[in-house]
Image (cartoon, rainbow, N blue to C red; front, side, top):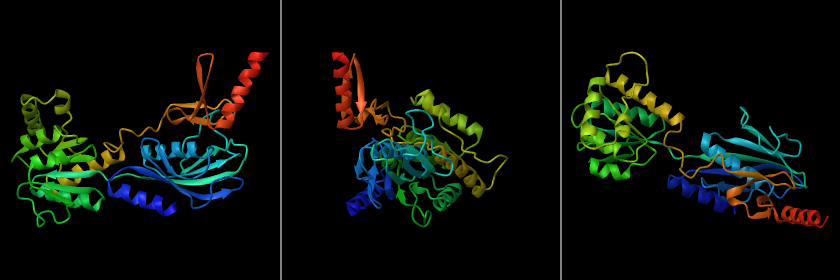
Length: 327
């Protein structure tokens, strides 16, 4: 099982898919989790693998989704001595990376699970063969971006560190995704065509290396060619550093500073299915938090749906309901 989970994690990374890896690092009996047990949490909330029973899995799943949302690893400590921030709610991740979650199961064991997010790198897509474009690609590589270069004349001599070379806009656009940060650095050669193509793609960020006057001209061209006004307005002039810059390397460095900030803000990096804040309910018997979307045990009473962490809690609830009816 452990080898299978690691193999699956390796495959997901190769496919560029987001996931969180949960590893049990300590367990105090009685608990069904054992040190070294692993599971993968996917952005849609599925947990594949084993980190413990029904008391542990919902909490680990929620923390896995939270890790995918904020990009930070955390040590999840499920303990009968932990106190929730509010009744029925788990505390926010502490600044030291430790999240304490009340262990509400009858076993009253303790489990420590390290949850680490694995998120695909955003891709800096540099369009153009200018000196600025080449400097931008070179700097982006050193800062752990995946780098693509697109220009009819692009080759490995111009872009020795690029992960991918694409000769034409027609070939580039279908390959772009929400994780693509596109910078048009054509410097007047085919600014309009490149900006229009990038903005018609799924790229979450499109910037143009140009003056404010040139930016306005390109935006006018976009509107004339049928691009939606809101999308045209999203075309940025990347300038992440204050002050006036003129050297090509400085222009590239300033643009990259804005891309770094976009990465910090998780622009385009959140999978559409990731739900860090999923609809939840409180098990009326044991007090555990239950994910409504994946709850397997439910019961109706007086027109209201109740959600349970396990069959035992549901049976207890139904017995209490039947007893209340009889009395």
